Image (tube, rainbow, N blue to C red; front, top):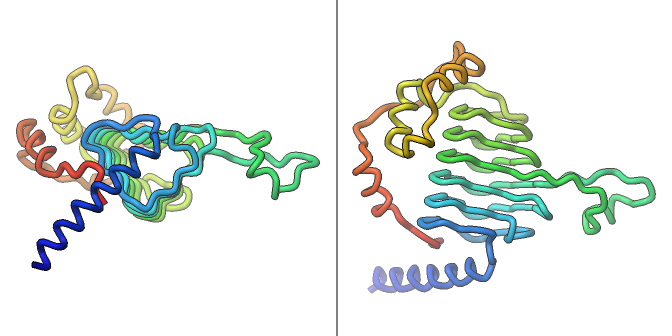
Length: 226
């Protein structure tokens, strides 16, 4: 009996949250998106969630005109803070009035590319751009561009590793992306020479093919829940 009640409550909560999300009027939301409440977003019309992206609970997005973009396959843990603007000190205007007036604010988009993992309690400041496949460790503060497949931690963010080897990235992208979207080997070699020389990699390989990826999408499709 208890299990039945829990199932009914979960279904009802999912329906309520689906209605809440619809009423937020996000700028764009793809298929298979997981969006968790509670949620605080200043300007939902400037938030874009791509297919199979995941935004966990207690996220706070302070955006006036700046965009927050979370692209395909990317996942965000709890307590994300996004700030797309900076208040510019202005003669004659006290700090108390700068925030509500947005006078001379400097707004920059925050972009998270495909297949990024963002850990708990991460802060993304104006102009942050997280490259494809990157990993952002818990409690990290990002205020700049992070290269693809970097593993970063700290405040401010610092590269400590690469997510995969070049061969692993090529196999990974063969499964995830159409050929035109994949990074070339030449590009990856340049990337590794510039950022990852002497650094470890943290990823492992498995026998997951494209067919299994499609099955995973169906198995773990929790659209609108929690």
